Image (cartoon, rainbow, N blue to C red; front, top):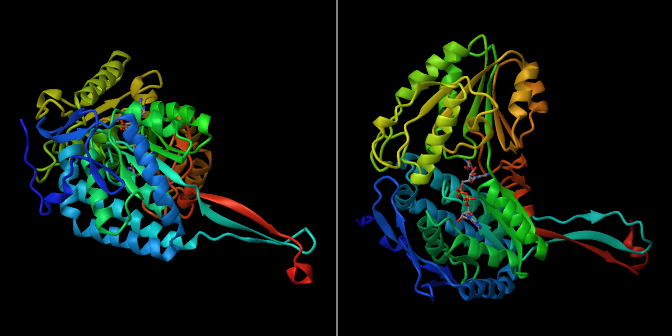
Length: 493
Ligand SMILES: NC(=O)c1ccc[n+]([C@@H]2O[C@H](COP(=O)([O-])OP(=O)(O)OC[C@H]3O[C@@H](n4cnc5c(N)ncnc54)[C@H](O)[C@@H]3O)[C@@H](O)[C@H]2O)c1
Ligand SMILES: N[C@@H](CC=O)C(=O)O
């Protein structure tokens, strides 16, 4: 079954790769169907490019780099702002494409377009502030300083859970720095990336500056990692693939940035109102049907309020509507594919076989094969997969703890270190937890923590580097030191 896609601007729906300003077929005639996870209907097809075509994208990015880096920062800024305006103007179409290929409800998709666009505006401005520094000279008659220069071509490899914002958070920073980019989106969600390319072209971003390649993921990534001309690799995705790409990039000594998996603890202090904390925990767990690197997977509640918390959590969870994200009033869309549903079921089975209690979550109510009803488990322990792995599904695991030292140990008992949530109004507890938690981001009494000004990223096996904020652009800049010697007495100090 093929589904027709109705857009106000049908030219935003592209089914070709985008290289050097041209929409490109695969030379070998291979292609892949892209389906709507909610219905299983085919939305369209993408070409799987051949190795020479991927290298062709590198040729194009290399040629375009010469001119793009030579523009003044404010000239690049103008084009990025034009791109931003187009993303805003086409928000509804972009959200429609995203919901159809990814499954998230339309309000969430609109929110992601807004979120993704906000990085373009942020980095358009930051591009004008890539300041070098002057260094007081220790060498007689010399002036010392630094310049910031673009690293060169950046390969950007992105996941399917946030098909637009994960691209713009990288691409806007790279383009503002003066780099050219080759984007490889996930094959599950290529159409958002291709719509971004269409709008980049309309915004006056020159041919070869923003390219989108499609193909067999290991094949394409291997070529990009092995290419000496690609100077930076920025990857968002699973820790497993991140490790692989880091290894593959070692031979060409690339600048590597990794935004990997998370397994966020959500800590609730004894002073909290259990209902307030439960509503926040539901919001932090079920966005994008739990397929979110920031999802609150391990919910650690003080024993004095545990039972009341669980009751409120279950009540709020029962009010969530699961369905096709194109329909109004839906809170949770489908999981991305059948394998994700199987993995979620096996994680729940594993927990139950090791003694967890199923409080709620009846899979017989699921409205279709790729849907998974929200699950609440209590009595979750470190031996269970639901604790050890990033479950990436609407499966919430709750555990009681006795005191702050114990909860710190429990929260840090994971290889991941992306984000943690803390709910308490006790300032001493807040400070103690904030300092002791081994996570790149700690959010206190707030579910929302991200946005353009924020240095987003993790520690431990959750990644390398930061995206967004005032340092996000540094991932795409080299520092060049200069020493101007023999200046005579005018050099000063
Ligand atoms: N830290 C963050 O900012 C952040 C944000 C979003 C998602 N994520 C993580 O992404 C993961 C979910 O996304 P996913 O399932 O698309 O991740 P994934 O690692 O399977 O895929 C990510 C990208 O890598 C490609 N890929 C897959 N297998 C590959 C291989 N063997 N060799 C080379 N490339 C390969 C995919 O096509 C995709 O483009 C979760 O772990 C989630 O936490 C992290
Ligand atoms: N929710 C994250 C993406 C992770 O999956 C974000 O806000 O960037």
